[in-house]
Length: 211
Image (cartoon, rainbow, N blue to C red; front, side, top):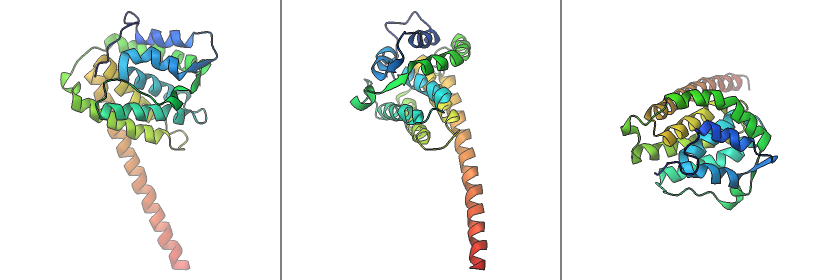
């Protein structure tokens, strides 16, 4: 995958986010977002959509609006597509620019801190296989984001953002962070499911004794 920056290579990505949010227009069309971040490739859009989901995912329906393109981008990574593509019906959608600007403001400080220490490293994480597996994980977490689970969007969103940042910067450490959080979330989900399923089974067995 070619994930290099072209037209705004001189600006830190955190500043690009701020500049997009500062445009005097109440709506942010997906066409503008893709046109701006598409030059930094798949990683830039995954990072942006993940951060947006983490900050404004509480807005009803927003995780679906953001989760669908994350899933499509993940599929393109999985199947090793060289050029980013999103269907027309997604490109016609808008994001509230004030919400985007608020999200950019909330993450700018932390993003700047990470940018200062980030650099290309751990080359074994920047292979075709690694990117394909990251695409698969992004698809899985995008599916989770689209589920009607209140308050469950934060960690999947951060996972997508970490993978996106790692791809954009070719920073294997950030990719590893994404994998570690993924493993933690998967373990937590499995433990919750095991606990809930045992309680449900015990409740069902107790109920059948009385009826």
